[in-house]
Length: 433
Image: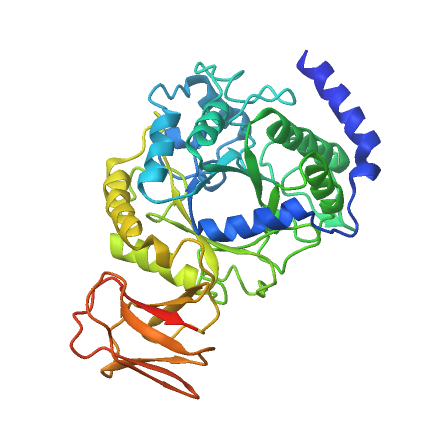
């Protein structure tokens, strides 16, 4: 049955390829509205979870330990996450102040964490669990008003048609069945978009394994936008945005930074921006990784991302049984309380209006500016350059008396003497005419 369905789907996709291709992409009105909403949400939860979680050594364990593909596939035989609870995952995100979830539907190991008719190597057909956690998560997200995005790996370490490690010549790998693999991906993406309710985005990863290959993005992106023109497409290729993409992402770096070496060619484009980072050092569950980021580090990352006009996608790696580590839940509960109190200076704002300063960043919403002081200034004031309009008032967002300020042609001086600065973020709310 699987083989027959696979052939039928691939034949249809081959016939429709030219119709779905988008050589010149013009976003629809709905897509542009989705982009603005995406920018408004600001804070999302990234989830890396798969059969690799069983080994407790991150999502790259098959590749890094050089486990043969046929041996690695045996992990599916005892992947049985009986403690998975979609309600708990969504509640965790909401409590932390997150507005959307991006979850791994298929990672580089090629295992599909959803029910697919295009491969028996999936959580329903290949594991004793026999259930589809992606469907449960999609339904719960829709119920609770959390947006759902699917991470989808472009590369595959095991499929013969991908032929991992093959040399690319003239845009095409010299082994495998490249067009067959492209159509396989299109078929799975079609399943994810048409069968799972409320899907708002596709988060691609793996282009960097074959940077010189012709990935047929006009066809892949065209297929997605044909199925749902409002779906947002992003690609973690570490390059400038490509035709057909709707947001630009930065891995483990704020836009404009390159501390990891991933963003050497990632010039900031005109699309909505997103930065992703891990809550400890690994994307997938690692039983030895206790290098947890503090609440201060997470909050300041969120603030700095907003100040640079980017969303912050914070990753966790749930345990193989489907539970989220208590270290993560405890930390994010504290972060959530901060966001609940100070969210007006984050949600719905725009950044990069004022360049980041040594003392912090500025976010803007309508006629209101929020100066986030994350580092105590050397002087008894902060200076905000090139403020447009006339500042009418200044006060702490947390409440209290008015704050002294002086506006000059070159910018605004806000005096901090007499203020008790918050060790994480002192937020000054400025009303501007």
